[in-house]
Image (tube, rainbow, N blue to C red; front, top):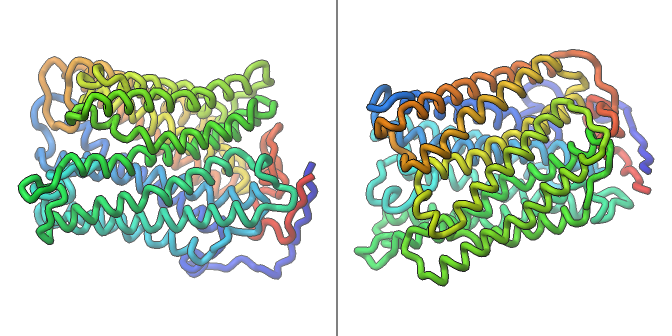
Length: 525
């Protein structure tokens, strides 16, 4: 039971004009900025994916030079990971975490403003490098040495600078989330009463603080190898190019979970609401999230089975990778158990959540296949791997972000969105995303390598189908933009609870949520 008091006096009037957005320290404004920025980056990165799929529509070199193709694959990956998925989750955290725990705002509001406003500069630097002499980064988003050192073009310094700024932004955002959750919970909001979205973000924030400095170290070593004559990754100078992979993936594998743990929190909020039942196994979900975070640090070299590791190393990383599927499986079973015999209604957020559960599980199973060391020698660096991580990151992370947007948009704007357009967006996305990524499993198993602008004739038909799915998926996201803009402009007024069966502090405040949510902290009974 929750009792709330609201002070709706205009003593804290909402600032107006451009200054509101430039200097804001309000968590809702900053959350909105993150979300708008991530949507723009999602469309930019998606445009690059369209270039990739247009080139691969037919065998042979059609539209772009191989070097520009490599720039597109590299910058597409960097933008989708650091510019679309991570800022979207940070925006959701900014908007929802203070409301969910009964806090007046984020704990460090000025730092919150700064952590957002350095991001557009980072991505401007990255995108501008594409127009420099010699072109932008062309060595894959994993920037393996020596491709990123000995053989890279002169814009590498700008790429390194951009990655550093993104990392600083992530660390500041993570510190803010931790301090807010630890210090600003409402009276009576004990640890095991926290909504799961808050739990998953708390654990994600610790992951970010742990691994972002590792990425900073990796890009700094790339910088000094290229411009200052060091030999960290150069065998001729006593370095080791494989060491780069160890350092990168020690960051890179926890990073994958940074992009999926908040998604687990979102789905754990939505499924109980539309099943009209409490979440099954709340405590086990919390412990499973913590287990995944811990295990994510001891599986990194499963990306490196073909680098000539000792057999003992390959066995260790094979078994630890299989182990991480256990807490992930716990989550899937708990979501299914929550829906079991519930009074389910299939609103748009629930449709995206069910699609997430099914398709993310497919991505998890293909990950288990990749974990089997001897089999990985066949799958490695083929389109099978591309299929695997896009099922995890598109039908996983991106679908969860869309589910969250449809779930909380009426709370943010005070308006209901158009159900028909939202339904069309869901079904078009669901069908096209599977036409896009599912056939990649087959061309990968047949031996088609990834990151190539040309391919053997036997893959032509499948690639044409994949590209058609890609264009359909890309175009259907314009529907999403349309739904969001229409909802912001107006529509049927939303009630404070919005969804029948919704539980939590954020549903106790009016819609749209007032500029200052809790003048006095709510008391949780």
